[in-house]
Image (cartoon, rainbow over all chains, first blue to last red; front, top):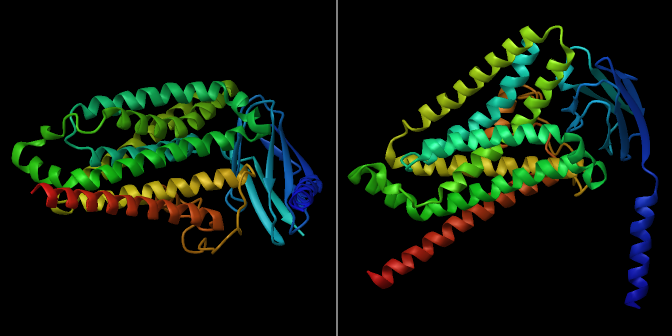
Length: 107
Length: 275
């Protein structure tokens, strides 16, 4: 009996993990985010995959999204965000705040 | 120049506030100055090492190494602050009395000086790694390096001055209140760091958030503002905390408080038995 409950739980957990987290790709180039606007589904956890094509490090930071992560030059970082309520969430590159600006739009 | 000034200032500020409080609390401890400078030195060396290996760290734990690393450092500091505070709740009152009588050398050797070195070192390391990476970026970009370097230097100086100012203010608190005030400050500092650690663990998807934006006081004090940042460091202020952050915060406070209560009760019992 307990083994079956265990198997069921395992299946649920595994199923949850496999329920594909949607990925959204972003590129940092010349200290700018491309695209500068990312539309993601509201109410779901999604994954931002940020590729830094500059040779210098950047820090992805967002007060709205509660995220800060350093991305070394020519490296890619994964950042989970959400589940978000519908709305606009701005983010920026802390090391180049003048140019590196972007927004996540949850719909 | 201005942007580098602001970034370096902000990173230095956080470390300086922590060091300012820790220095005030440990005043009178013999060779404290040496310990603090050693901590700063080791912290800078560590920051440089972390910066060099940033991408190695980043790729650990399936790309969530940075989050795990930051949370580990923060939680280590929380543990040390907690231990220190509980220790002080037993010895603080003795120190207050004896320090006044016999000068301040009584504190020699009472608390392992290594705790102080590690505390300061970790505070510097965490903030310093970001500064090193940022400065590396400037150096690599070449053209505007002169102005940026000047800005960074000014930022470093101002940040450090704020730390000294906090220290100067704290040590002017009359002895009677000094240990209670600094104990509360250390406790809030620890709780705030625990909440920050929770934030990193949530970001790395290691623990659930238990709701984002428990409340939103951004209209009052924004996280990104200077005041928001200072309060964030000192008391763990967050304009939109996640539920889990609050849990970490409250649990840390509760553990330290009950630890302090417990050891002082034990001490009273001992005194009753022996005295």
